[in-house]
Length: 321
Image (cartoon, rainbow, N blue to C red):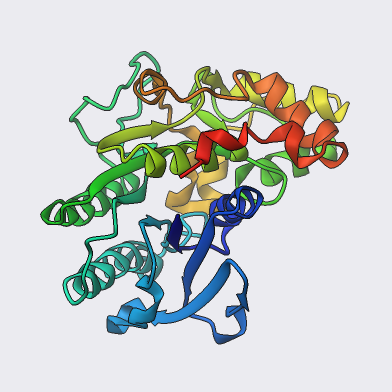
């Protein structure tokens, strides 16, 4: 098996690459930066420029699956220019891949798995969302994911399977939301946001990487939620982070108007509530290693540095080609 990955040097991509290297799965990856090009056994980089639809077609040689993770971060102030970048980076990435695949023999490619996001689901304290829900959130995030998934649907033209993974709140100490949530708690100024009752559908970084590889191996088609089985409220999440860090929480909840004054429209992501189901991927046979937020945070903060890869990774047979 050889997988072509876009966004391989990012938070999620790096974890997927790590697991692939543990399992002896070869990786080709695309990057816009010459200094990020590596050439070593089982890990080969190739240049591309999605904004100009430029790509080194050699990246597809020997490839049997593609994982698409590329896209500008939403965790920056939502200026009009950055909003355009968030959308164009996702659209241009997929269009460049699509046009490249039209120019080569794709017979050996069996699976295409693209990132998406749970931000497509409407803000709600009461709904429990499955992949069958069709209503789109009336927000910039909802708009982004709708456009992103529609662009990915173009790949249905090819004979390989197409899966879209709606990623939740990623739990990792190497990046993403968790370190930012932990900073004020470590500084004794941590608190929940708003009512604290908004649902946050989280997933441990290792489980998320395994979801992508599971979708590749099993040639899954359709939409799948990339979230763990037990969402928590913002209050619960903040309390559990404080508990694992052994820090007190004594400040009142942070009001929405204050965060909007600081972060602008981007503050929406702190207060949006999406309780999302993982049942569909589990019914396909996927087993989460981190079922609840307590074990996930313990694994991240207390156990990760002390465990051998064999202790935190699934059985090698899981990803055998």
